[in-house]
Length: 165
Image (cartoon, rainbow, N blue to C red):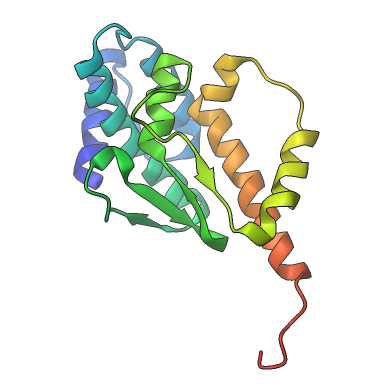
């Protein structure tokens, strides 16, 4: 995935003359770059979403911990498994960031364990409404993922210990 992520670094460097360094602070730069991708060119969207998704996945993985799950047959279905068994689809997130909407054929979602779902839903409902641009931004998605991982951890810390623990 690192080689694919490096393609995003190169795309941004050529276009914006800025270098991405795999830190969360570079996501607004990548968000800006994604606004420049021609939405009416599906092949370009697919190429950039894959590279940017690999980069975003690496940023999230490094910031929150976790590992890539590349067992799916298609790169656009690769996921990152975060602490607490939260999984997310970074390439789907990037396709949605480019097109500013849900995208057929891409999974722009995250999954949480069933035991944490209601607490996560409550925490997300308490957040203020945001404009579509912020909702689909990778910066906004990282902020949401941080909240989700924290809520899942809180759920686990509240769970009663079983007798054999």
